[in-house]
Image 1 (cartoon, rainbow, N blue to C red):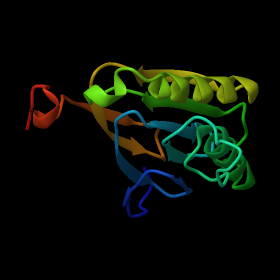
Image 2 (image 1 turned 180 degrees about the vertical axis):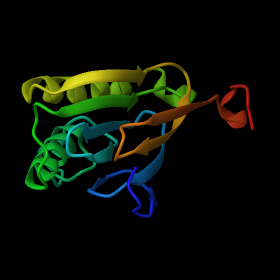
Image 3 (image 1 turned 45 degrees about the horizontal axis):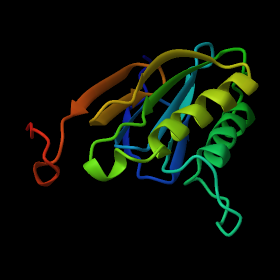
Length: 164
């Protein structure tokens, strides 16, 4: 890393962030998905955090939806100098950490939309940690592509085992 100061950002659902300087992006995912992208050559990267795969006709098409947030993330990185051939991706989340999600496909659909859009842009997925009956805490370095993921096991009120 260069002598530039590192920045820390917490990403909430429905947001995306792009950085040309070393930045650690943190977020917490359940059924949501985060697409982490970085350009290995130019050392810039970004992350989105979306809740649902696609908007319904009555919805505002915004970054809450993977079909909107993922192309926007890619396009914003390319406007900052990244190239799709140098971009690498990690797809994280899409779990079912609470009982109420066990009968839905939203988690799987979130992962599928991320994979589909990355494939359409020709971006190679080099890491994927998705699914399961737990959430995840993510820490992503936009400069290096470094990614730390901690599993979050269950909620006490949902019948899962709680861990500190």
